[in-house]
Length: 93
Image: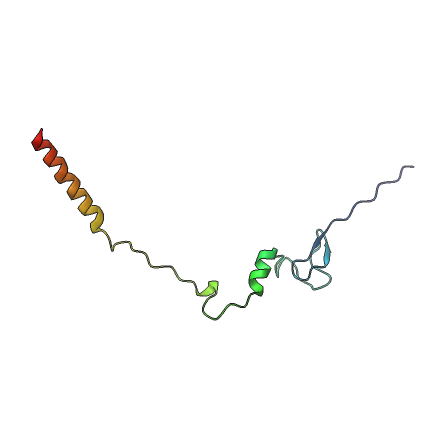
């Protein structure tokens, strides 16, 4: 009778505590973090560990003001100048 080869277990490092976690596990045995609390990548963890001064976090971001409507006259003047040059060119011919 042939023996079945043993399956190789795959592990990954817990993003919160660095412990080895069996692939497919629901939670880390060392710290208890799970998919609901967030298997986060290292960049997210590093960002969350930064101490950001009050008023500077993403929850306080507002849309930057736009200049839409403030410079409507620039294209209008460009069109008027182009029309004047076109009319001048027609009179010369």
